[in-house]
Length: 347
Image (cartoon, rainbow, N blue to C red):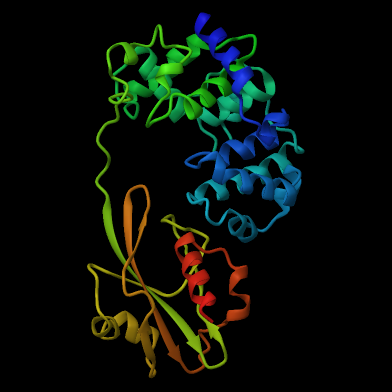
């Protein structure tokens, strides 16, 4: 009880002034929690404000086209979050008449919602004593208690969830959960934690045993896969290009991209135009030039994309059905959005 009291007292003096802290509406809490997964508050805040302005209710989000939702999500990454958000909004609007489930057990059944999000919504909105465990919580608990169990192992996930559950203040679970997350984000930071002024300085195991830099422990990362992307940016005489929607379950599902040739290594212009894929895409005469001499390295969680954008000039073709003046309407991965900003900025 001393731990939670100390933590909540700190929170009341130091909590961040965030718009979703001013409501207990589960729709807004849900939006903020989904957006802040794998995303810093500083980046997610503008998206939250944009979404809540455009879609003030779950019915508004449910009625939107998926492409509109993905376009608004552009730049946040992990696009499956946006697709699941849209799917679940439709379910809540159409099957639950806009009413969000009020218990952890029911909330976690919704698509795109796991233990962390279900705990956050049920505790903040409905005062259910369900402890959240995110990166901030892992860090605080592993350091305070000196726990070396890897946080990304099955044993670690189970251990830290159970520990957090024993610590939560059952009379104000929402405040406790937000307090421990804020404390990890603002004070017990990954790098340069403020140990000298810490409220737990007299009882933190990591500080006492000089383990702060070693904790939390993470199992070795999955090997990162290298991929080599060659995007073919078509410009026709009538100012059109080719964009197509990515299908399947891979990265960027539902987003649009230029024709792509993936190679086993970095290739030059000659190798590109002699490839079967290029000849199939552009059987007629073209002029081709490389936009970026230096490869753009786009890092995803388990893969790094080494990317070249090739500008292909050709005569009019039926395949090219996207006007350059309308290209910014389409949801594209941030890699392509950054290219378009640079490319169109030169014009």
